[in-house]
Length: 79
Image 1 (cartoon, rainbow, N blue to C red):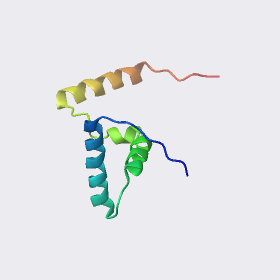
Image 2: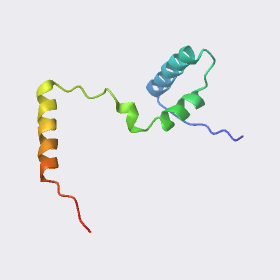
Image 3: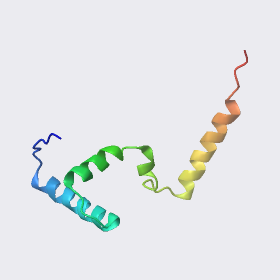
Image 4: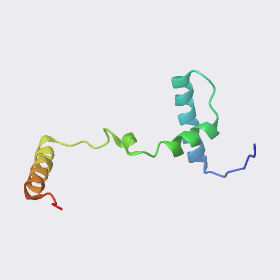
């Protein structure tokens, strides 16, 4: 296995350590910064954004109305 040195700012290092501490608590075992970074890289899927958009009921209705309008204009292709 090959290791490389990576330079990060002090603030970045602190945040990585905070994430490592939270992950240690969740997993109940020691966690390396390498594991934290690998998990951050792997967690790039859209599902990690779930719940991050706070929408009020007015905005929801506007979106639903726009979707209904688009669906009403959609015509399936025929071969």
